[in-house]
Length: 355
Image (cartoon, rainbow, N blue to C red):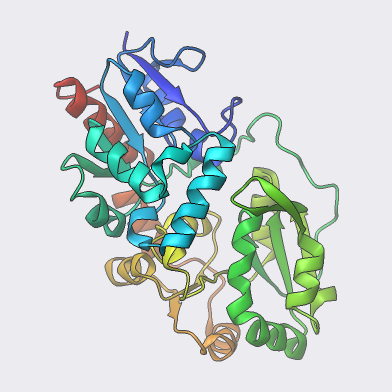
């Protein structure tokens, strides 16, 4: 039996970057996953939480990087790059000797057998350092399943009354509301709409490790008019399903000045669609591409046009999800399609047709 070593985001494999990616493929193929001694395996897969070059140096088997964020495409300035490397060195996923974090990434890409990214846009930035690059998005099948992952928290709150907008995500991505907060605040207040944020109560301030930000206090600063209409719910699969059903549509703002976030994949949009939500998105390369390819009923919104688009969506949208959205997922991102892509990656580094 094939044995795959893995350095995960979380030891319990409940982190979305674990369970929606390699772990979902391993379970579908009944492959032996080695976590305690990852080097005791036929192939080694490294998540973004791994110290890439440390593991590559130690590995005798082929190494696959699951590099799902667009760090290389961000092209950060020297100060940002050095500080990021310092923070990641503190967290154990880099080493201070690299100086710049992108230096660590470029070296790891060059020395790996294959690199997985989450979008064609990200792939273009990795190809100069490794020609064996694959695009694989997350497996969101848990959102359409009737089962709940074990151990996730369920909110005891009753369903909320009135029309609402839906957003979900990690706490550190709440910063993307800042560039639309005035427009969104006005819309919610003037139309007596609410908004549900399925997220965490607090999150690290810097680099995922240092300081704490209180989510409620942050939201109150960003939305002074409508703050009492915004409800923060604990992140869980149950709450995603529960509160998405109570909302009229979803929203995914991305700060256009954030070069790192601009290269994010369409994962969040696809998860919103599987939750049954038509969605307003910032105009990013990935969202613009999906809008063109899918012909689905959602809007890419240009900066400064959010309040207008929100009114348009409120007055003219259909709450029923456009059938083109689900057709697009079925054709391009179904569980079978994603598993076959993982087969191709592992097969490419082992010199076989399939894993």
